[in-house]
Image 1 (cartoon, rainbow, N blue to C red):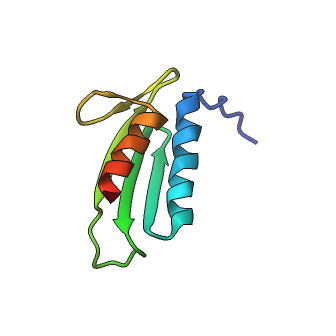
Image 2 (cartoon, rainbow, N blue to C red):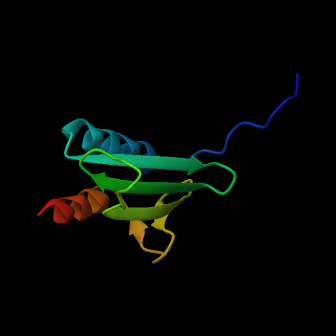
Image 3 (cartoon, rainbow, N blue to C red):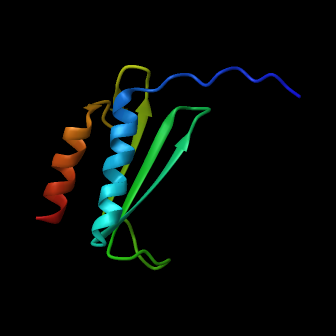
Length: 94
């Protein structure tokens, strides 16, 4: 059996954001999809209004760089916290 190195730690904000996305899914108003790419430490988020189907386009899309200390928006290099993301999602539904 191969000995693989231990995974590198991610920011505590990472798990808080995934929990937030699970709460979005629980509302039933939106569906949040997310994929984590550990080899490049990216979290890709797509949110769809209502239930997803192949004809829908995301109403919100973001790619986050996941460092050990904090998360950054891949496009703008802005630091993202769970609170920032929650504010953006609230603006989305207004």
